[in-house]
Length: 248
Ligand code: FPP
Image 1 (cartoon, helix red, strand yellow):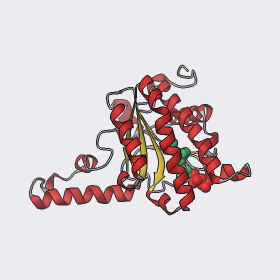
Image 2 (image 1 turned 90 degrees about the vertical axis):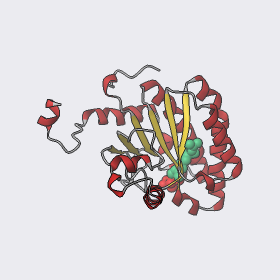
Image 3 (image 1 turned 120 degrees about the vertical axis):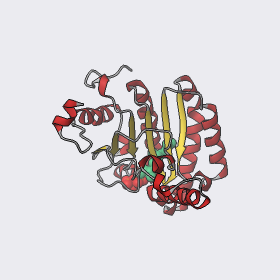
Image 4 (image 1 turned 135 degrees about the vertical axis):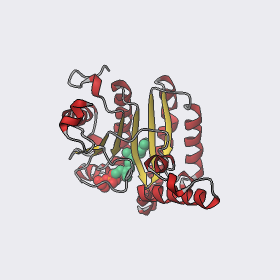
């Protein structure tokens, strides 16, 4: 699948982050249980990962399971964990063939041991790949991530390995799960809600945000291309004036 003609190949976002919302409502609209929606959501994940690689996106971050999602019914949490494990097992060969590296952000110690084993194995097996980074946010929350980073900085200041005068944006970046990847350029939320829901709170400071009513199970190539077209049509000024940007 080549880069669609409707996209400017010179202005592809480096990092796209997605809040995959709407699986449950999509299932309900088809008179099916919620897990049916999550299964269809996995098909969208496969398709969007494929597109991201073809379009030349460097990092694709998917909000697959939030810190708040642990409060869902036990059956649904178990179902989601099973889908994640199956996905990782089924996709390993494709990740290796397509030069995709898997990483994750979040408190993965909370995941069931069998899921964690498969996850850690996939991370290890794909570590040398360098076309697309597929970053799964798992048991992830932006506030928890910031607390973890701030605690680590405080420990270093207390032990004398870091001066408080050295704490700047770069220092905070280096203490987040995302230390090794660029900030998202484009953040997409499907499912019709217009919230960040504790996702990449620090990192999304300058991201273009794109909300769509399309439910995640229906978010496929055309919807993804539309989001990138919208991104490409926006002027990104980082707080500067248009004239400053033209001057470079
Ligand atoms: C939100 O829909 C979606 C989730 C909480 C989970 C997303 C998970 C997947 C797409 C499948 C597993 C992921 C991978 C990477 C294999 P919702 O249930 O909140 O929908 P609703 O708002 O309509 O109820």
